[in-house]
Image (cartoon, rainbow, N blue to C red; front, side):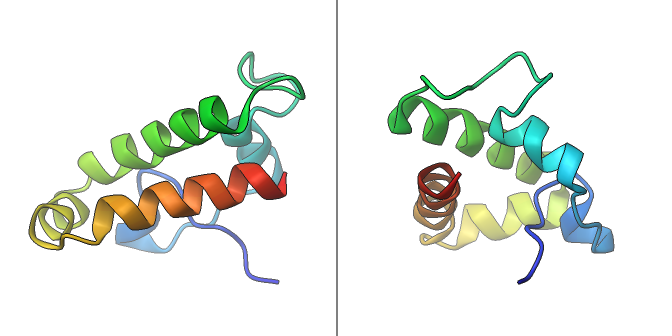
Length: 86
């Protein structure tokens, strides 16, 4: 199984999130957000915002998303899938 790449530096240097980092993004223990009672919509919005903020912090990712019309829908779909599978 491949590890999910979703950090500010993931696009530029290939960094892969650790299990603890992934739990933090997905609302696992100790993150203060998310949780078992969080709706799919709320989780998707939160994870999408994390991915969008990470992309906006990277000039190459931001430029690509400004040019490609499939960027935002792909990030939303990935966020929804990640939330549905947690």
